[in-house]
Every structure is written in C-alpha cells, then in structure tokens.
Length: 59
Image 1 (tube, rainbow, N blue to C red):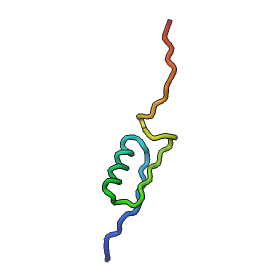
Image 2 (cartoon, rainbow, N blue to C red):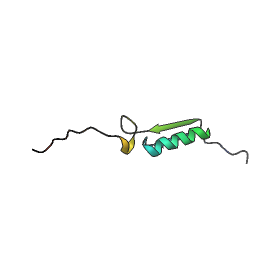
Image 3 (cartoon, rainbow, N blue to C red):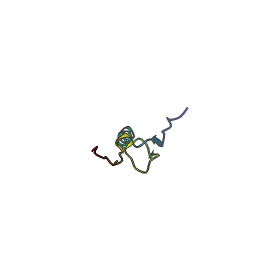
Image 4 (cartoon, rainbow, N blue to C red):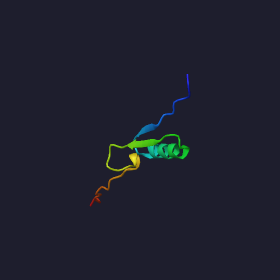
C-alpha cells in the first residue's frame, strides 16, 4: 500500500496548562509541521486566568 502517511498539522483546543504543555511536547517531538492552539479568551491561562476584584472590608 505504500508508506505511512504523516499527519502534518494538529489543533489544540484550549491554551490553559494542559494545552500549553501539549503544544510544547508536540513541538519538542518535531512530528507536526504545524501546531495551532485555539483559545476562546483574549489571553492564555485557562483556570489560571484571573481577574482582580474589589474587596470591601466590613465595618
């Protein structure tokens, strides 16, 4: 049947901790020609993404 077909690109959904580690591991393996990470938020971080909130002390 011929040679084994190499997958040239991969998509990673989510740029949180797992997505970042997965992208780094795939890059280190040098198997894929293109690695694309998709994140719905404006910045990476997943559950590490935080927003500062105002805290009021009770009187």
